[in-house]
Length: 91
Image (cartoon, rainbow, N blue to C red):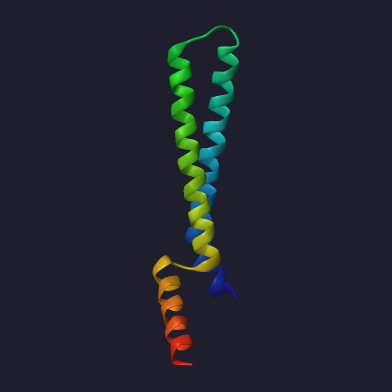
């Protein structure tokens, strides 16, 4: 069982790293929104947009890592699907 736990370690570390980045960016975004309550600042608005784009990318990366953990590498999934198709055609 420890062999399996070790094989997921890099992915779990990746998810943890991504989550830490998401938390830090989210906190910064909250600070920026609070600063906007004092008055409109185009630089702050641009930074919020930039952070939103970074957060979108991080969430997508986290979903991809979770999918890889759950279903395996993309090439392996395609290989299994093709093998399954060949078996169905042969039957």
